[in-house]
Image (cartoon, rainbow, N blue to C red; front, side, top):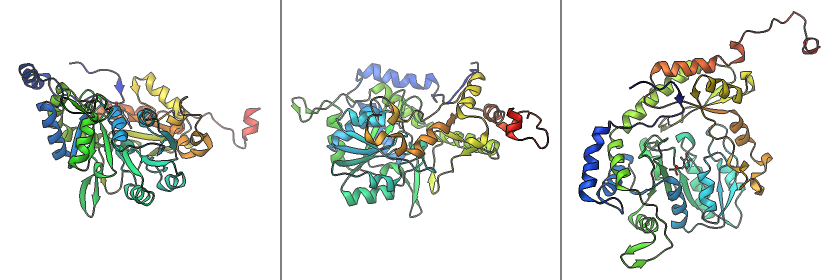
Length: 395
Ligand SMILES: *Cc1c(COP(=O)(O)O)cnc(C)c1O
């Protein structure tokens, strides 16, 4: 197999095809293709054990899972959320007729800032929908305190947070145990993929049962429908692949960690290039490697982005534009540009560099070198005569 020349921001990790064939044979033999079949049940149990969470409901994708999570908790009115995310976060609110209220993010974690959340609460607020951006845990304690005080639900968009743990009283625990519900994505581009897929993590069997009814049209049995449910079910094909992928994901995250460490070494001393701090007291999953290109770099983020593209290094600007700048959101009062200064600045500076388990160290060096070459200091300077001023040079 030849190595593709282009370095995309991510490349899905897949098992050898022959390892998947016995699973396919089983599906062909049983003719059970969907509707909570044996692979679906096995993957739900395996994920509970692997992640250390009480209940998992598999979905066809995370977007349907987010829409269903809001239904399950009967959330309405206004929900406080972040503009610095993938559009599906806010779209899931709109699909439920809920008004998103955007608040600004913390400049260090890029996650919702609890103080700003509290300041945005109105009598219509029913819930908070934060994301653990790039897998960095939110200030879950701060968010819980606010939710408890104001009796709000918390639904975490945990699409980036597969396998992320926090140290709690010295014990590592899944970050997915926080909030009323957490939603995972198993899309092709994520750390753990089932081609397409997602899940809701819930705290108890009763909540899981309600969610499982909602993802199957509201059916409880052959003739009873208890809710206007949707078809959100994961197929047996995706679930079987997930079982196989679960055996690979720890090694994949380990390799991502090595790549992260190498990038940090190679890019550490570049003026104007900010690396996000490693999350304190958390085991990250290295799902993204984001850098912030500020004025001190001497070259704009978009120039760096274009220069990398020209060398077949397909870094991505996650998250630019802000969700609040898309046409269906920009008319909202909370979307006003001056209310989201941190998110706006970060969106103009961020670049996510390629990171995926199949990258070798030379790939990482190639990317780091291409970034370094864009730093103003790295380019030949125009000789400036002694005593010259900006004005005299411009004249
Ligand atoms: C990928 C992603 C989603 C959507 O996941 P799908 O499984 O593709 O529906 C939602 N939110 C965030 C933050 C994501 O990164």
